[in-house]
Amino acid sequence: MINISKMSKYYGEYPAVIDVSFNIAKGESIGLLGPNGAGKSTTMKVMTGYTPPTSGNVNIGGYDIIKNSIDVRKLIGYLPESVPLYTDMTVKEYLSYMGSLRGMGKNILNRVDEVIDLTSLNQYKNVLISKLSKGYRQRTGIAQAILHKPKVLILDEPTIGIDPVQVVETRKLIQNLGEEHTLILSSHILPEVTSICNRVLVIHEGKIVADDTPENLSNRLQTSNLCEIKVKNGKSNGIIKLLRNEEYIVDIRTKDGENDEFESYYIETSSVKNPESLISKILINNNIELFKLSSLPLTLEEIFLQLTKD
Amino acid sequence: MKNILTIFKKELIGYLKSPMAYIVAASFFTITGFFFVASVSDAFSEASIRGFLAGAVFFMIFLSPALTMRLIAEEQKLGTMELLMTSPLKDFEIVVGKFLAALSIIIVMIMGTFFYPIILIIFGVPDFGPIFTGYLGLILYSSSTLSVGIFASSLSSNQLVSLVVGSGILSFLTFIDFVSSRLSGAFGTILNELQLGGSFSLFDSSSFGIAEGGHFADFARGIINVYDIIFYISVSTIFLVLTIFSLESRRWR
Image (tube, rainbow over all chains, first blue to last red; front, top):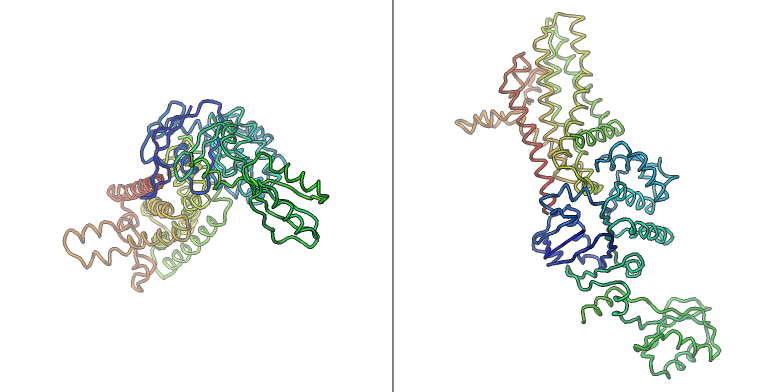
């Protein structure tokens, strides 16, 4: 469906994407994972025909992105990162307008209603977009992207800046979309990409550093070796002494900012399996009341460090 | 064609829903009304619309860019330009659709001034020739100014910048006769030929209220010169093409 070969994009002297090649088959859902400025958005802007690549070839659905730009654009539904909307229109007006721009015929209004249902925008369909919250704007943006049943759906950071409840709902919505479309999604959150996509491309400094399934990717990545625990106040020295005795524990630090009742610690372990269960066993055996024990997720930087090492 | 119509309809509704078109129309009627009255209220004054035309033509260098400043600048500010440019429509369809919407608004506005000639018919014996050519010229001239305004709108995402740049270009094409009259030779002639239509002589006490320049002068006197028509159509086309280039250059940045 999508073939990208040796594609580079420079903004002036600054390389945004360097010599990237990959293929995406029909029906795949791809996650582009990378920190801000890695080249995710640029790659997407090139695929949508918004900005031409400096060099290399991009082919979508058999059409060249430059020579057959209009044909390519017909295949694509795109939600830019900034979620551009006409704020002086209602949701319904906006969607009808976008539909007619995509050359949809008489059945526009039926399809608009269908999409409004799908994105649960029903109670807001006649509300001005300027009055909508960020989460509903995001849905309007997604509705706009799927309106014309595009073969390829490109969503740039679709869950950024919306509240956690809406993030969950939006992810669910996107996951369902992935079943009908070839989906390309960008994110800087690892769990988001692994839960929605069946293939992950990790981009770092304009280059693809990993291209794998979420399962293989998490196997390649070491699990985190940093835990946080929260216990009742008053037994601090006991805990530190207790845990220092264990050979797999590298370091214990107190976490600041807890109230009088509780105190928290960061515990760094060497790479043993399931450090959480080991730690909890020790604490419980010593009659220490445990209120929280969690392993902290890998930060993106740690992921890139690990992926670029091998 | 269908895409042009889609953009055209959207922009037309946009004009009717936003205050700018009404503000521009109100200013237009105030200014033209003043110049019309000033030109016909002297004793033995001519029953013509030349006073109204001269005022309309001159102040169009501010009113046109005010009408067009939103058209592209706002799309760039909202980021919706990215949606338009990734939708299956060509850049020229975007520009032409928007231009036609602005032109329609101006034409409706100009039609609103038909009561000036009606007043002339009631109270005097006007010559219909110059009235007809005056209106024809005014529409052609306005189309050029709108085209310059749209070009200015494509240069920035800030509407105020668009307004100032647009009025700046149009002002330059209006006072260019001051420059050309001080130059001799081919360069002076070329500059003289570029004068769009308005004239700053409008404010001279001797010719107050009736002063046209450049390619509008013949229309105001009742003469249809094919060369003037071609000039206005060329200016409109050139600035629309420049606007399309300006949009396209955005892709390469």
